[in-house]
Image (cartoon, rainbow over all chains, first blue to last red; front, side, top):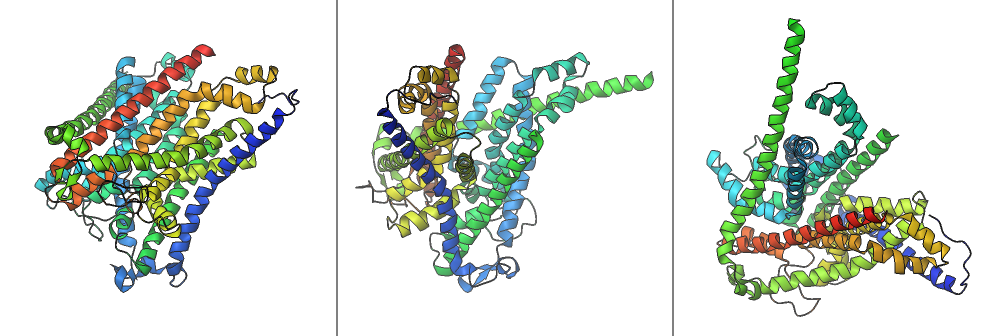
Length: 292
Length: 289
């Protein structure tokens, strides 16, 4: 940045420092929001965390918060199963979509398809959930009752994180220098050889960062999963069993939770946030490590 | 000879196979998108009318319209933007124009916003319930819902505004400095007006995010579907209305379809408008450079 250091309008420098003060105040408040959230989550869960050992969330026999049994594992497992399944589905589809936009489609078609993906990203989660509830769940019910199941959650989540993966992979692929691709073509590589051998290694950092971002979204998604997953607290035996995830558990029980029950819901909120923070830390570390 | 031939064929088939997979994937995504839109249209279009948009819901939403719910949604949105915009734009101006990109303070603010961007919306809901509703005593109200949303919108508003300011060519700042303009005058008279379309696009994206939100409002702005009398009344947002109709109200599917249609139409318009803004702004910037 370049600025004239000495100003001929000396009095105006007062407004300058005033403005700078106002701007700094705004920035400090913005930064404090994060701190405030962490403080309040810890404060609310402390009434429980201070008394019982955290190990009990993993060793208790069941989830009966009113009787003091706080087994979070089945819900953690539900979150992990649903997110993993959604990623397995959305990663190939999302990367294929990005490849289509960058390498396979004509410019006109590519523009339209990118628009469509961006619009898909704008559809709210509650509408995805509603569509899943009225269309997907009855369909799955015909194959194998009850319908509201891990499978429905996976399908809806995959749809929701697909745009994230596509759009980040797209910008990563677009950033690959043109000369790399021209050299690959000059060497006579077929299109797939060029993509696998040149474009993917060059764009790997961005693609992986996008996948990590999408994972965070899948873990935190609440309403859509709540509407289609059946919400039974259990370890699922198969794709057609209902599950309950950590996030939807909070939404389901917060309305009537009191005392320790409320505190344990804040603990699960804290757990969710730690998971997401770890993921974003991982993404940052990965990006720095590979750019250097 | 035979070996190289076989290899060439394998490459050829692999290439074709990947191409077929890519086209199939794209077709699937398009088909699902159309499927969702057609489903919503078929389920809700017949129910849509002017009266549906202005009447208040009756019988838990089975009859009547979504008038009071649209009003609550707008009020929540206004509160959220009123709180988030000044904070976000001052932060963005400071980060882009005043502190060097590598300074400790800038890194700290940027890192905390980056973490904030990843926090799940239900966690915002928990925080809003504990802080705004109970600690500050705002209860289940439009005010606490809007403020919770404001926290959620901060990162996206800051990052779009900062990117917009950074995209203004340095020659502008040089010229302003050469003319002896103060930094305040440069920022307010020159940089902000040039970056205005980028700020507006970020604002539209933020509006889209806020209108779509459900989980953060569940325990902050509440469920009451009456017409709100003041900002301290509880008010039900449109997204929450869809959720309630489909999960808790038997026979609420048709109005839920119609409400979902209204919400999706609103969001599609906002997003398309934002995309157009960004595109025309980028074109103008490349001409200016």
